[in-house]
Length: 639
Image (cartoon, rainbow, N blue to C red; front, side, top):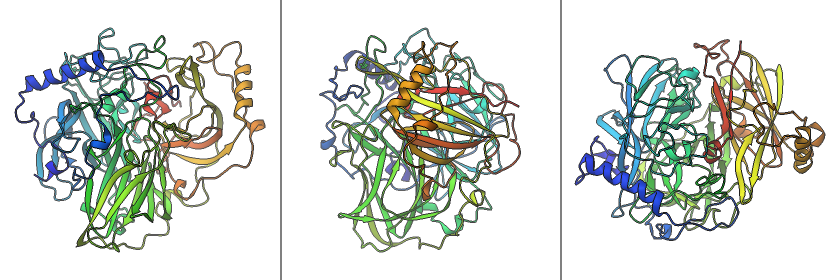
């Protein structure tokens, strides 16, 4: 089947030679080996886990052997019950690495699917990343999510039980909790994937668990209104304190929204020429299993947590360093940075010559106008970029490499984790065929009518907030990263009024760029501006004395206006940032101001659901190692 070429498992059954029982036993043994036998690692930059001896040397993995043959399969509606889709999660085996290297145990979403180009039914497909949801704007859907992970199967990676985490069994490594989140979707909070709304196969449920319709205890039924503008959205697990672990195990996929009256789409490549590309970094053991750190940098505080995971191997759509054959024409690539912490500065290289590309969209759909002649693009975890690449003038058999030059951590990096030209500096290869493909068409001058006029196009704010990104340091680096110096469980401090517009000025006092993500709303970038970080941090700490972060729950953060600390001039959004965003890069030594309207993206006066209902929403850093250790805060929309 065509799906096999992409690494998809077309049937919901173990690989040949494995019974379902033996597969589960293999996964359990793998997880136990991780927790008991992973060697300790040294530290270079204090907060960076070094890769131990004994893992698979990435330079020995053959590149561009795996073949990516087109867009992932698409979920099909089911006629069963009062819901449109049934998607479950189970352990599976995934051929991430090129054969004859071994397959990898993963957790994977599964459901009835079809070929995204031909529409041919494929039957039940279980895959990591999962199949794509392809939605129509204005047509709501109902999804039944089912946790079918064996209740006695421990987590694939060691859970740090000192974190605030989804704890179903009093500190045990099983059963595994999940809670799906559609990242970027405007949706009621009961279906948003609140981190405390998790559920297990044994029927354990988190404190905010909710199902829109009655169902079994190991499932939840969510309603998605699909009112967003046409956009590249994605879904992933969001369980409290376990997001980094469950996403690393395989739980992610694309969620695309289309609009029948979209006036831009007829000018764009489609079908086989429109390909979502999820970029993720991983580390493999020689037996094909995934390696993830188990030794924390401050073990007396958090024995297993490290602030950032950086893999030494790159995979795209679940295939390590794949090749994709492309026709002589234009392609639309919907890019997703699905990594834990790694940023990517991407460039298309034809034998040392850069191939320019055009960006037409980002998180919240089309940007204001096409941004042409781009040579590089930096994308952060959680961000998406919709780009056009033209292979029309390249001769057959031309090899084009998608390269990466971003430092890790971003922006300053470390020698151990920066993009290595031999490994993490390469993403995938494109090989040009002798077939003629999609001929580029002239695009409309304005791609997104909701972004007409001077930018930002949202009205002036009725409320302004100053919010601080702050790392709490330990002996060997951060012990947690915070928003406003507050823990997740501290009282809610952001209470925006439904229908109003706010401006959030976010002050980055840390060493890293943080991709800050808001649930419910798409926002617009106002400006970035440099500031005196040392002076501001010292005065902010003094203003909150005698308490220091993490503040106790009876200490609301004392705001400190950043105006007197600003240097230089405010820098407005660049051409490819004249857009709706739900995740945006906030750089160290800079103040980033965003404008948020707590009403629908398309300008409608109110949501078709109650956005003020419990449990509310969250905003957080999408370096998910940070998110899992306090860099996430709840917020509640009020009337």
